Amino acid sequence: MNSTRSKVPTDEIASLRLRLEEAEETLRAIRAGEVDALMGTGRQGKKVFSLAGAEHAYRMLIEAMHEGALTLTTDKMILYANQCFARMVKCPLEQVTGGSFRRFLSAADGATLRAHMKQAAQTGVKIQLLLHAADGSKLPVQISIRPLANEGGKNKIIGMVVTDLTESRRTEEMLRALTQRVVQVQEAERGQVALELHDNITQLLCAILVRSQTLADQLSTHDSPAQQEALKLRDLLGHTAEEVECITRNLRPGVLELLGLDAVLRAASTEFTSRTGVVVTLTGVALAARLPPDTELALYRILQEALKNVQKHAHAQQVSVHLARLGNTVQLLIKDDGVGFNTERQPAKRKGSSRLGLLGMHERAAYVGGTLTVKSVRRSGTEIEVRILLPSGNPAVN
Ligand SMILES: Nc1ncnc2c1ncn2[C@@H]1O[C@H](COP(=O)(O)OP(=O)(O)OP(=O)(O)O)[C@@H](O)[C@H]1O
Ligand SMILES: [Mg+2]
Image (cartoon, rainbow, N blue to C red; front, side, top):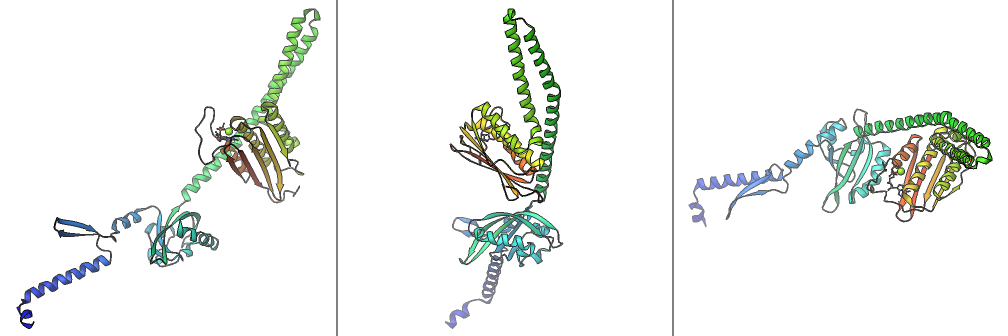
């Protein structure tokens, strides 16, 4: 044994020691995640082995993102955060990492997140909340949470992407303001056209109607064909005057201001039935007190648009309209038993359809602080529900 050891030259031992040190250093670098790939020489020549922990490219990608990216434990301790997130919360990165995500949330948002965490740890979830930055400012964000890894089956790691919603909220607000302005201008223009129709055309038609009656009276019964013609002309004029009145009413329901929503909904339903043959049943309509004028107008316009859709698309036999007051909320329900449609999918655009009707209804409801929901089942029909919260102080009725 001793004789063998003495045969190994000292410089070979030094070289082996050096190689061992090099190997140890390589292992340490691999463990520390400093190595992306290794090159080895095998039977088929040189080969590159990329390491499972080679995260360099991913880290670069995550740091270059315009979204905040984090990894957390399920009890919301931040394991890793990118610079973008640190900028969002206006806090140095070293103070973010290792801390709790909860410190950037209000108590209410913290509770919301907690409520979603279980689902987030299983399937992932998206929620919108306000981030409280270190300087006291607040940032509207959407956070998308997904489970990433399950360390030893116990400690789940959660991945989170935080998107700043400031810009999209601003755009949404601008769009909303613009749509509301469009609604206001549309109402004003409709009012103007209705006034001109009423003051000029209807008055003129009535004058011609009276003249045609006089003409018919003056024509002798001996000239019966001429008299018949004059009478037909009178009837035609009468019919035209009624049509113009109907258009005027639709453009600006003067009766709405005068007689209230109840009367106008009834008139619109009766007119719809006589024009289309589709039966409209009204229930619960008589409210004991008037609603704010904007709310009455919005509800009337929504009914008008819904009935237009029934006529254009539904092929319905029956429509039921229900107006009621539930505490401080007014509810309008419009149901038809028509063909229904898929509310999730945009149907192919048909000729003559601008597809602004439903959007307009939503905007009308939002304009007066309400919400509109559309439920539709193919071959069963469509239901539109509007709920508007009345301003406090509006007397409770019903
Ligand atoms: N009551 C309904 N029954 C069946 N389908 C409907 C009904 N209401 C709406 N739809 C469907 O939803 C689509 C969108 O309706 P929307 O009122 O927004 O647009 P439109 O009626 O096509 O066009 P516009 O109202 O701008 O003239 C319609 O094209 C139709 O396919
Ligand atoms: Mg429509």
